[in-house]
Amino acid sequence: MAAPLSDTPLSPLQTIAVIGLGTMGSGIAEVLATAGRDVIGVDVSEAQTARAVAALEASTERSVRRGRLTEQQRADVLARVRVSTDLRTAADADLVIEVAPESYEVKQQIFRELDSIVRPGTILATGTNALSVTRLAADSAHPERVLGLHFFNPAPAMKLVEVVSSVLTAPAAVAAVTDLALDLGKEPVAVGDRPGFVADGLLFGYLNQAAAMYEARYASREDIDAAMRLGCGLPMGPLALLDLIGVDTARTVLEAMYAESHDRLHAPAPILGQLSEAGLTGRKAGRGFYTYEAPGSATVVPDALTPLSGGSGAAGRAVASVGVAGSGTMASGIAEVFAKAGYDVVLAARSEEKAQTAKARIGKSLARSVDKGRLTAEAAAQILDRITPAGSYDAFADVDLALEAVAEDLDVKQQLFATLDKVCKPGAVLATTTSSLPVVACARATSRPQDVIGMHFFNPAPAMKLVEVVRTVLTADDVHATVREVCARIKKHAVDCGDRAGFIVNALLFPYLNNAIKMVQEHYATLDDIDAAMKLGGGYPMGPFELLDVVGLDVSLAIEKVLHREFRDPGLAPAPLLEHLVAAGCLGRKTGRGFREYARR
Image (cartoon, rainbow, N blue to C red; front, side, top):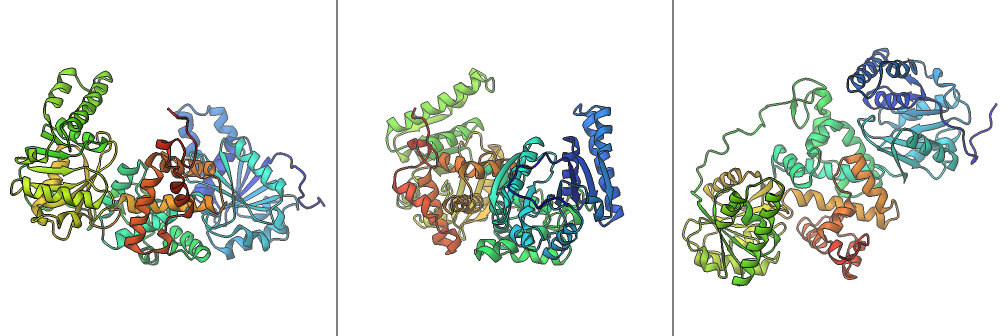
């Protein structure tokens, strides 16, 4: 009999068994066979093995149609895969990857049976994203050969593979599966054994908060999803993603994470349990947070919760002219957006010179659009002519909508709103672009709090499609209707939310960023591995540390403090590493150093 696995480097893994032929298992089998491996697919259900073969045939046929495979290559791939319902067919495998249901009992039973079937030198990998690899390994006769190999769905498309070591895992096993992942065209990231690992450890906390936000009726499912897609550039909104992953699967992952962390952010939102118990587990069931055309379908169909297309029915106020207060990047960007939409814009700052500088910035932005062929020179000139710079807020006397984009400081904003209250005509809508301060505090600085609302634009305003429309408990219905109509006219996607810290986007984004910092602080993973994991495994346009350095660590810390102060959740307390970097003046790209160092311009 062959000797047990040692630290000696292993020969390439050629014959690989995949245990569990659901969506993930079938996808992994396709990846392996396409890369020239001999694959043994095993499932307890004959119907499931047949579905897996049919899925492989259909997928490879699509690849032929798209020119990715020739007919001969397709035939070779199909010939390399054989399926069975008998675990003993895995006897000759160099590597076994199990992707059975997320249950210790099920997985441990598979590993116990494999111990008496496979060679002692065969590596056993679990595809779990929620359970302890160490606990699974400890139950095996050869714990040194057990590790985690976490692919992401859909396996053929997603580049990330997390290679998970326990304290018992032999380095030779880690090296062998890492080499395999590279040979498959994947990007392996080495992580330690804790529930969720890197990508899911960050992702599921965010998904859980989104579910809790929806359960609290803070915002509609459509608005939560649209906010995160448009505000953060994510490929899917969190509730749609929960439906894709499976509400029951998400609940299992979060239960495992909470059991280890005892962090309330990981305690599954009750709605996840309610939907799971009712069998409303997402796309696979035909209904979860959304309703689908049929079980397994990706097509969402209207249901009782789908918003009416006509809106609330309240009529808004007429808006022909807009005042924008401020001289920074956000103020000039917002003024450009309104002028492009045909509004007459008064751009007011604390001095005529600052207002002129802000208008000049808009001129440069429009010139770039002309150079790129997006605007004619004549159209750009007409847009710029609609903007009138002013060195005093008295110029807002006749505007229908006054929008401030000044410093994110409550005292500064309250003083400005007191001024707007005096200079703006009765019936004018007064709006703040704050991203973290209470809108009602700005409203109370006026004698007409019913006319005050939040319009949170995202930077850069001309490019970003999202506006969070923030009603206070005092905002009038027709003011809300006015702002919704204005958003439609300026071609922005408006989402409604209440007046609480972070609104939708920042309330979901910054705890995720904070948790990423905690991972580095605890030496669980490196900056580069975490950024790679979220881009490759989650489809994020930027990794968390790239984003933090762009946003600014001081800005990020300020928002974290606001969230922690409002929600009083210990899990939202800013990571000490973030506080230390800010105290040291390492604020990100703008200072040349944040989590990474940047070349000085």
